[in-house]
Length: 87
Image (cartoon, rainbow, N blue to C red; front, side, top):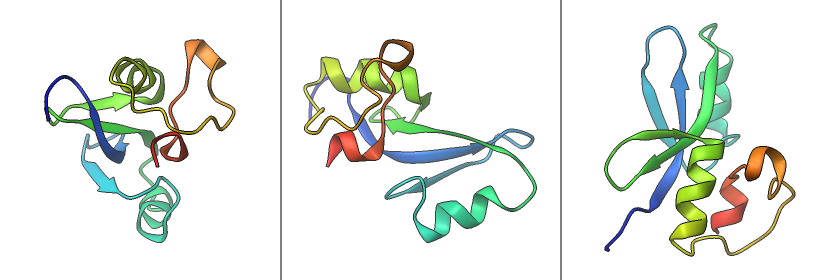
C-alpha cells in the first residue's frame, strides 16, 4: 500500500486521549465505549497510525480514491467521512 490512506474507524476519548479502533463507529463495541462517561470524538486511523477527525479523514480518503459510496456527508464542512463511504 502506498500513499496516505484511511485504514479504519476510530473513537478517541476526550479526557484520556485513548484511541479505540473498530469496524464502524456504531458497532456494539464502539457504541459501548461512547457510553462509558468519557465523551469521544469519532474519526479514523490512517496508515501512519494517526487519529484523524471526520473532515480531515474525508480529505485523505478522497485524495486516495477510497470513496466508494456516497452517504450524505459529502459536502458538510467540505466533506465528512463515514465508514459507509469506504466499504
